[in-house]
Length: 374
Ligand SMILES: C[S@@+](CC[C@H](N)C(=O)[O-])C[C@H]1O[C@@H](n2cnc3c(N)ncnc32)[C@H](O)[C@@H]1O
Image (cartoon, rainbow, N blue to C red):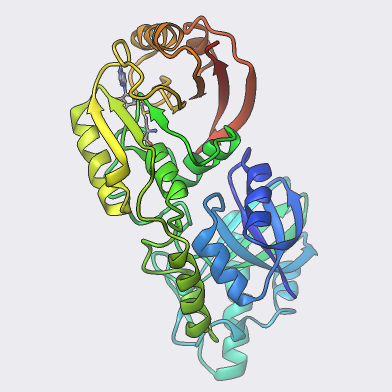
C-alpha cells in the first residue's frame, strides 16, 4: 500500500498521530511537518473528510538530491505525472526552498512545471495549462539542503477551510489549530467548554463538531482527489455515509462563548449555524471582567488578543489582569487553557501555568498554557 503524508502546523504533529491512529490508519511515522500513514485511495478520502488536524493529505512521489535546474528537470521526468489528470485539466506547482544551491523558488516551480508539461506533450502532443487559482492538480516541491521532496496533493483547498466560516473577527485562528488545541488540552469530548473571548467562535464550533461527531470536511463541496483520474465515486459515497452514520443529533451538555464585541458574536452565531452546531452553543456579549461560570464544571479554552495583530500591548495589560482575576476568583475548580503569542502579557494574569505546549498560529510561535484553578 502506498504511503501518504498528513501535513499539519508545527506543534500539532503528536495529536495528529493520535488522531490518525483513532481513524484506523497504520504505518504511522512522525516527521516535523506531519505524519506518514499507509492507506489505499478510500483511506485517503477518509483522511481528507475526517482529519480535524491535518492541513493536507499528500502523496509523496519523488525524493532526490538536486543542485541545478537540469537535476530538477531530469528527476521530475522519472515519475509519470500524466496518470493524475487529463491534458485538458490544469496544474499548479508550489515550491519552498531552504539552504539549497538552487535559491529561486519561482525557478524551481518553473523547472518542475516544464518537466511535467513535457511529459504530456511527448505523450499526447499537447500540454495542460497552469491555473494558480483553482488548479485540478497541485504539486508541492520542498527543497532542504539540496534534497528535494515532490508530493501530489489530494486535498485541493487546505483542510482547515471547513466551509462553515464565512466571516471572522480580526484575528481568527485556523480551524485545525482550534481542533488541535482541544486535543492538546486532553478534553474528553463529553464536557462543557467555555471560551470567554470567543471571537468568531472557532474553538467552540470545532469542539461542538467533535462532540457531535460531525466530520470536519462534511460542509465542503470539493476536495482535490475528486479531480484526479480514477476518482472512485462509490468509495467516496461509502466514506461519506460511514461518517454521517456516526453523527449525533444532540448532547447532554453545552458550549458557551462570550466576547465584548457584539458584531463578532453575530459572526460566531452565523458560523455555528452554518456548521450545524448552533443548538449546542450559547453566545453572549460579556466582558472578561464580569464573566461567571455558566455551569458547575467545565474547561476554559481561549485565545485572548495578544498585541501582534489586535489592539496594542498597554491596553491589553488590563484585559489579561481581568482574565487572571476572573479565573482565580470565579472559576474555582476549573482548568483553563490559554493560547497566547505574547509571554509578557501572560505575566499580567498573575497565575502560574502547570503545563505548556508550543504551537504556531500562522507564522507566530505561541504558548498554550494550562492553569488549574484549585
Ligand atoms: C484573538 S481574538 C479570538 C479569536 C477567536 N479564537 C476566533 O477564532 O475568532 C480575541 C477576542 O477577544 C475579544 N476581547 C478583547 N477584549 C475583551 C474583553 N475585555 N472581554 C471580552 N472579550 C474581549 C475580542 O473582541 C476578540 O474577539
